[in-house]
Length: 281
Ligand SMILES: [Fe+2]
Ligand SMILES: [Fe+2]
Picture 1 (cartoon, rainbow, N blue to C red):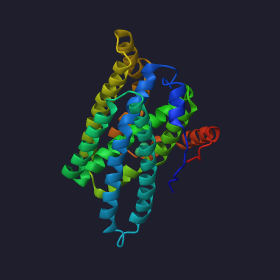
Picture 2 (cartoon, helix red, strand yellow):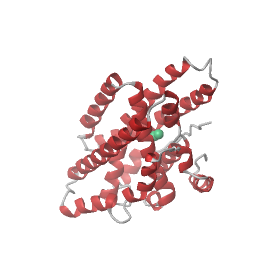
Picture 3 (tube, rainbow, N blue to C red):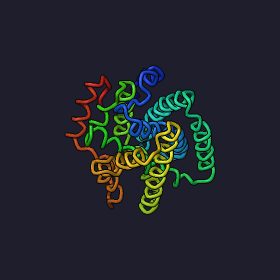
């Protein structure tokens, strides 16, 4: 059963102390700021899909008890994503109030797009998109928790290391839910692969664009900073290359998100959970 962890972190105080809260570095901090402005609306999109799939599955659960376990997990998934969305939304609001005024119109546009997509796309497409982003986030969590744990240690402010650590743990824990929804709905492999390609492209463009807006607002978009921003993602040890093997596993014919993490890796994550005082998986 999915756990709903509670956290209580003071982001405003942390940002007041050090607005470049990751490694005292505007490049990596603004990469994480870009993520914090993308998450809230994206996670509401997943919740909408999860709620609508519950209505759909309600029709079948009398005849097939296998739906009951999934329905229980979907409830947990909704609660976890709602909390993530709330926490990152709070950070986005503080950032906006601290002078990054472009955040508000950007997030409002994303909200309009979410509502538009909910109206125009079928449940199959919405499930495929949600599963694609969920694989993207669990690949990011894999990189953060297992490939390059330094990325968490490099947060200069504990409020943000705890926020990203806790979020990564729950992404690992609920990595199968959107995939299970797709399986139950009979979403085709072709549609899943196609939406995943769109999502990779969208995330690359969207995160880079937002990181750029943050850095421009701080007058840090010179060639030197642009090169460092590129290197942070695409350099030798950049996050893109660390995520790549897991990302690409989505295209395997019998892809199973459960198998992304083996027992040893889950044990390693749980060990880190003890250090952070976060309930393990
Ligand atoms: Fe999340
Ligand atoms: Fe998620």
